[in-house]
Length: 200
Image 1 (cartoon, rainbow, N blue to C red):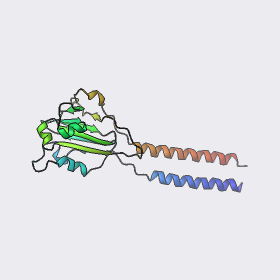
Image 2 (spheres, rainbow, N blue to C red):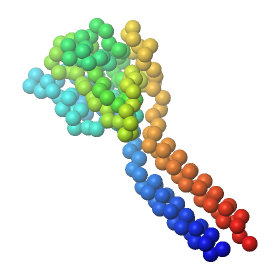
Image 3 (cartoon, rainbow, N blue to C red):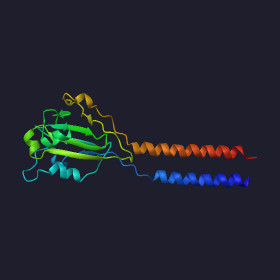
Image 4 (cartoon, rainbow, N blue to C red):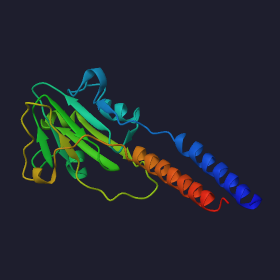
């Protein structure tokens, strides 16, 4: 009987340690970044054509975060790498001209954005965002998802069928922590049942 009680106490202590470790895992909340900060999405000053990529380098983007483009008399195009570097506005993945476009970063890797005005793009109104993965394993790339503000027009392009309206983001790390805690509690219940079963 003493050995069963000792085994039970040891298991309980191990489970409590696991609970302490899992509940202290930091869960980073998803963020919405306003592109360009207070400046918004505009043609940069002549002497500062790298404005948007400098802005991007000061931030860290994770899967589930989103970018908010705010602009007037302009547009924002989601493009591929070649179109980004050549300011090609003829075949965007999708395009927006509604004044405020929110784009969810739903995968790791690079995202490319340019102004719909070729001259604006050539003078620095373009943005490259590198999204970091929150997981150790590689996530296969997929097209970006787009969330439209209420009452706005939608993006249009031949390839827009590859883009879906984004649901509310859900941080996967929070789900993993909840699942781990659930497993810990199930193990505690199982150990308690075994202990009570062998009680005289």
